[in-house]
Image (cartoon, rainbow, N blue to C red):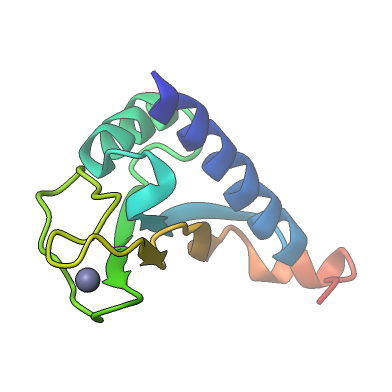
Amino acid sequence: MHEMGVAAEVRRIARQSVADRGPGRITCVRLAVGDLAAIEPELLKYAWEALVEGTPEAGATLEVDWRPATQTCRICGDLPGRAPGTWLRLCPRCDGVLSVTGGDDLDVLQVVFEEEDPVEREAQGGER
Ligand SMILES: [Zn+2]
């Protein structure tokens, strides 16, 4: 499952992000997922839950911030409607070439975590 690999990468990034700021436990990761990223949000959440079960991240939620892509005709400017997951090559009105804007996001936007022990973090020198 493609989503499992993405979930594992998201966890790696989230862990690194928390490690950079001191000991902590991830509680929520917010991810931007674009229309063109070939990710099914529900499958990704399912993969995430399976991945973190029984790990220090267990219970951490994955929130998906969906970023749609839009298609525009360069000739008539029309925005032909399309069914989700389908893409048109040419404008249905004038046969102009359609351009696609946005929707290629796959970024970790935010990692929320609880500090495990702020006092201990200070004692360790507390980078950042
Ligand atoms: Zn057109």
